[in-house]
Amino acid sequence: MEMHHAAEGTCTSIEVLERTSGFKFLDKAAVDDGDTRRWSLCTVTQVEEAKIILRMLPIFLSSVLGYLPIPLLLTFSVQQGGTMDTRLGATHVPPASLFAIPVVFQMLILVAYDRAAVPRLRRATGYAGGVTPLQRIGAGFASSVVALAAAAAVEARRHRGAGSDAGRMSVFWLAPQFFLLGVMDVTSFVGLLEFFYSEAPAGMKSIGGAVFFCVLGAASWLGSSLIRVVNRATARRGGGAGWLGGASLDAGRLDLFYWLLALFGLVSLALYMLCAWSYTYRHDPRMQSAMEDDRVSPAAMKQAAV
Image (cartoon, rainbow, N blue to C red; front, side, top):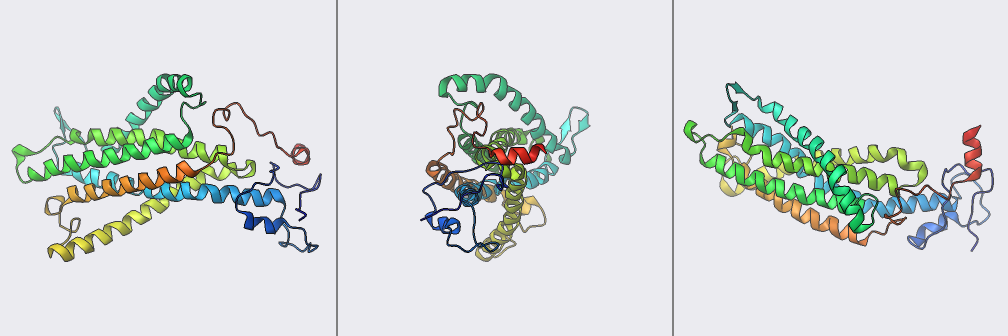
């Protein structure tokens, strides 16, 4: 079987890829059967680029599920803050300003991780980043599960003291879940971008950021659907407005919804770990930081220089 390879001077891809054994049914697209019409014959590099994207697809799909609870947690945390004691000395903290808390935590955690944790992890594991990108993403998803559990515990306590000014909790009880969300952003956010950039073909690295924000967008959209499903299911069972359908948080059961999200996050983490465990890196993660693409088409480099 003769495979179609790009001829010298005709390659439009930046990186020239060799044939791999996976997804063999796609190899038919590169079989030279004499038909040279447009879209009738692909090069081996084009086929391998499609294979790389297909191999990464389970990681991105499981990441959508892992990110699904996060927009919901951020939205309801602001509503929680509006029902809590927002006093900070003689001033009051606006609930909407609570979003500054995870941003501050992110900056502090990122500096501590880069300066203190990475050098020690690098010496222990041999990986350039201390851990692999997939391990970093998994740590972020595990942190999100703990954040949801912490949010559920805080909301359960707030709900028990609702209606009593003396029993109002301070808004800073929300700080632990915001801290854990900061840990998630530092790990999973950066890990996903690093994963795509290191594994994607050279000609597709620039769309890594776009793919990541597609993951966030899909997670937010599915989160809205999840709210409707939960409201309908709990309204039928309890005969009321549902966990999230009341006129206020005090009339609903946000704490139970948080526990449901924590369970969902735990299942998503298990699914992600299965996908990550079965994934095979294109390059050794221990060498990625110092490695440049060594399969670059000379013809493509000449065209880029012109």
